[in-house]
Length: 290
Image (cartoon, rainbow, N blue to C red; front, side, top):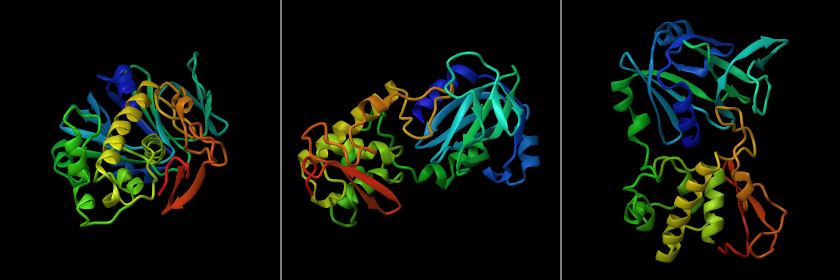
């Protein structure tokens, strides 16, 4: 998300929404009537683009805010497309990785002729248009945990976020807790695996059983992995693309996620993949002992 908003700021900050198209109105969650959404978004100027957790937020000119949550397979693209034979085709010459896209379901035309598209294979993404004041005061924003890359996210604040688990008031496995957006905002499945592999912590380890040195290692690698991911423009192992259509390069330093059956690059043991709720945990059973 951080990679996306930085790129969007370079490309479309200050632009005005001229028109909007969709072939899947259900993606618009607020207001639920697409005609009303279209009426309200037209003429709005993009004054700022920022992120809270995994929510991308466009601050608009008439005291409104557009919220986009890309979910599992969504990503925002900036370019120009024409629709032909059931797919959108890029008109831009250059390094775009995908010239044809069959998964664009929402397309904003901007005042300079550029387009902002939401491509989403599984159609899980959501788009909401809020009154800015209402969004700021909403549970959507208030319930999110601290941002791990903010300067004030110290080791003490990290422990404070895990407080109820460390004190034994709540039970939770460290991977699931790291992914809980109400505890710490912005960490997903890929990066939780990568953080814990580097910290040598088993993903099923109960938070209450972690020692101080374990917590320090998780905190250290949490910061390190996220910073490296931003520098490398994210992970495109699956569907993610930058707004320019390029793949992120975090894959070049991916050590454990989706490497089940391969040798651990640290100890040469075989990496395992185990179901954890609705997700999967990838880990080295030798390096990351339970």
